[in-house]
Length: 243
Length: 204
Image (cartoon, rainbow over all chains, first blue to last red; front, side):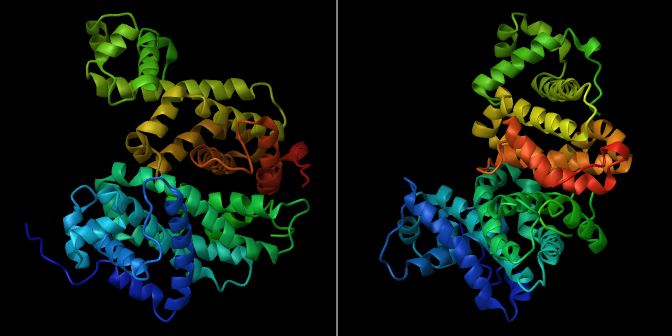
């Protein structure tokens, strides 16, 4: 059945706004997350993908871009490998060669990929912060807004949370590791409270950041003053020598 | 919302417990009211009389009961404690161990995440945090005042949920020493400005 092919990617506007003038650094941040995904996928038993194929990454990214736009339009349940192949202008066979696990693998990896892009954008948005506390403030303000404004995420959360959340939860280990690894160099530049272990502190702070990105609870994370209080009490009071 | 009168619910209790055992064994999807009735050694009619809405009503009752049971367990775990550090360690440790050893919950997280995660993620996490705040707040209020207690209750719930869903090599909240380290390293310093009177002797 012929679904109309849309030329406008649903995320095109959001991406353009976020990335204007900063694309290369963003790509680097997002690639490093993607590389983590690729490594762990290659080691997994059911998702090896061909090595030594120079165009592989490109095909992969074309499929993922296409899958993302299909999910945005039809949802996770109704997206088929045929839809994805058509949107990517590739044959079904090519999609299966790159993703031997078929739809399940494509969906799994597109969720990981978009999560990586989200945190890549976040990393990019806050990279210039002058100190650790302001870094976290910017991160929370930016990420809270980005989650609220993420149309595809919000739509899937409304209509198909059961298909999305298990995968996001599996992904959360990697997301925490990514956030923590991102925080470490910033932490190392700070005067830390006596006895603070940088890796453990980065892990703790990453958890608090991710938790608040997912749900703001009693806080209003559009209010900079509240975000400042949150960061300086629950996140950093035990980490920095002075907050 | 979580205040359920346990005394009124004694007839329901064996059926609730049987349901939890069934869920821990087969999951929510595969558990039938027949399974529950035979596990509870009662008739199907009894189950229907207690829960006229059938399986959905039964599952709602299970959630209410389990929340009330958790609240009661938390109360017992912190009873008689008059030191804020001990209170935090006992409360966080109890919550983490209770949830970790809750067989029905663990079955859901492992095998039917599509049923349980929509109840504890994003907007729904706000609901869970509000319940946790109601539960933890009263225990904390004597030390930090009511406003701060509500905030801290939510904070502690975030900590427990985070380490439950994504375990860490840094802290294992089912281990009392580990909880102690976490409380001293991160929680007490954040609460220090709000601590009252003789409790205000926190050091790094």
